[in-house]
Image 1 (tube, rainbow, N blue to C red):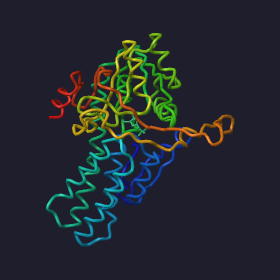
Image 2: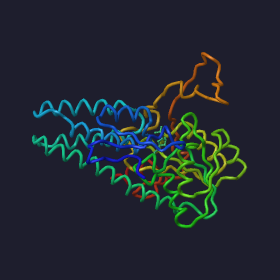
Image 3: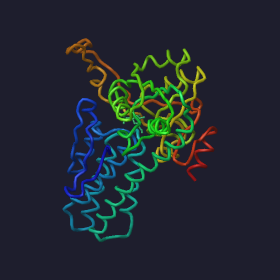
Length: 346
Ligand SMILES: CSC[C@H]1O[C@H](OP(=O)(O)O)[C@H](O)[C@@H]1O
């Protein structure tokens, strides 16, 4: 089942409401770009490639439902939609990469508004279909790095829910499973939004892949006691030197893996590489509401003291020297990342 799709009959964008999983599988329908931007901001839909496709489909909604018959008015309306969608979340470069692809359509010397509407929708649908094919290719390359019997530690959610379908890092695990390899996954719960415990666990149930959920802080224990053969995670933005911005907790996980000699694999489409950013320090890190950290219930009661404060950076940066390789749809990239990323993107 796709995390997001265009409904041509109703001319709406339909997406799985990932806030309800695994208890309920509910769909949300967005009728305009504001609703798409809110869905991205509220993590109805999340995951770098998935929010890129959501942004593109949000622009398609703006174009299709625009009331403007004059080029200037139409262009102003689409620029406003682009601005609102760009402001929804700052870290995943896929959002901006997808919106830039729509802008490329708008830069064409076409003043036939109806023709432009069709071209914008076609480009959004193309980005969605490409995403599935890209993830499948990433998964084929990544599955070759997984051996029968491996215990793999996975962080956050990088599966079909984080993309249009199939997945990136979790796609590699899924592919290896389909190839008949026996794999056990240690699923980092991934506080505070629990993408691992809720979403990755739900996906692994669907695929029939063996797993156990662990608290994020337990990763070091399993790595140090030799229980883990590989670490896999995704990316929201990769700097030109190979530094990876990914879900908070990735850095500590990579540190523990590296210090225990466990290979660390990042899986991401090349659209996640941002060559305009030389190193990870320049990647914008989203700080989300403290409530996501403080809202901890136990036996129906909130457990933190009244008036408690919290910090909630949603991502961190893993320096490239902690990575064994970056798995892309063009192949597995090994160090030196700066040189080899540029080569694979050229
Ligand atoms: C396949 S990329 C998924 C990537 O996005 C997640 O962040 P969020 O759940 O906040 O959108 C996380 O960083 C994953 O690695």
